[in-house]
Structure formats: C-alpha cells, structure tokens
Length: 83
Image (cartoon, rainbow, N blue to C red; front, side, top):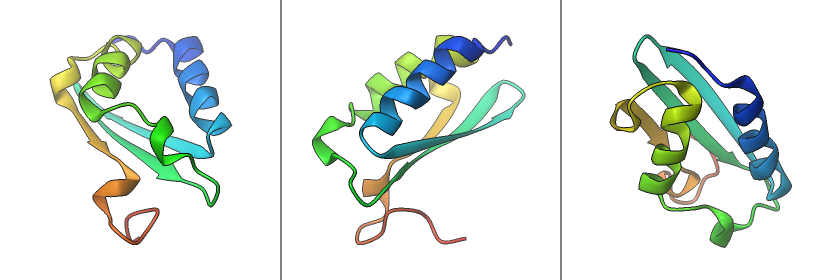
C-alpha cells in the first residue's frame, strides 16, 4: 500500500474549494474516509460515492471496495457525525 500524497492533497484542495474537508484514516488494506461539509458547502459539487471511491482507491493504494466512505448526507440535518 503506497499513498500518493500529492494526489491526495490535490483531492483535498479540490474539496476545500467547495467548503468540504476530507478526513482519511488508513487501516492496513482498508480506509475510513469522511467528507465533512462546511457552512458554505456546495451540495451539488460532490461526486457520487462510487465515483469518489474509485478515485480514492489508486490514490490510497487500496481496493476502492475497501474504502468506507461517509458523506454529509449520511447524517440528515447535520454536517458531521456526532463525536
């Protein structure tokens, strides 16, 4: 597993431009990835989850199917999961 830090930073910057933050927690051959919306986030700007997973897989050096992806819309009425 080799993470392409440059491409990961580019993805994060692209999301930041639409007021999103990406948190990545690598765990061996799997990853937990959360996309957190800021107050000015563009809902229409997020790509569908399967597309985001297919983009993240090569960047994180893992199978896209092993990425557990959480979007802000997974928690209606809130921008992030409860801590």
